[in-house]
Image (cartoon, rainbow, N blue to C red; front, side, top):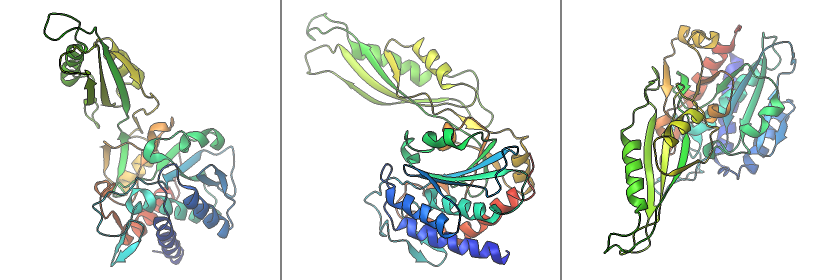
Length: 355
């Protein structure tokens, strides 16, 4: 590893330590955004900021060149009660750095910033934008979605999430549906009313058993799971309304709108999506960045977990240091060697890269 990459890596680890020590729950990321903005300024890189989103562009930005977006997030979920280490302690034990957001996705965020700094002054065949953004954990409106119009045309996104630096080339989307089955009240002792709960159960049986015909080679089938149900006011009254919630995980074989249309045509309830913008996303195996990743020995796979990729309508590759199994778990940690290796891999991926 060159002296420069080693220095960038150590500074990335120190930055991550600061971020872990600073609370940054979704929608409460002011302090970590301040740290990121100050870090760029300290290294003489002009920082741009909107809300809790911080980004910077290549020094020699050329509109005639394609643009690559390096993106990760600095918000975290709230820690559970089962932590045995202080979530904001940034405790080091040998190669481990333990703390909330260390793995998801602080390590990716600081690694991408290090890579951006490495290429900042270099002549490249592409422009770079590095954006460390907010509200990823809640797919919030004030995260990456809010600044994409400010960034201009993006030709490729590299999304930093813990993938063990393998190449997630596809990702399931998310569609959350609220179903309301309607009936008519009546006395439970007599043959009266129209039971909305029974209608909902018919719907749920269909949702449980239906198989979408098109199956993704990478992501498998579209998955539908009913996760909540509520009906009735008392034991002797036939319910006139039953509400249920469906968690749908789309693949690239269907748009969210197509899935919604199929469901509405087959159930009795009124179906309302909470949003339709979290589409399945990905990138072709033949894309130059994927071919380069494979040439570096990286494994390609389809990811079942959702990220801000879902909000990007351009080719995206999800790749970053750490292990997804540690995310949102007690005593979350990252290995310092994973950060150092991740930075070196990102640099190798982009060095001499051409579209």
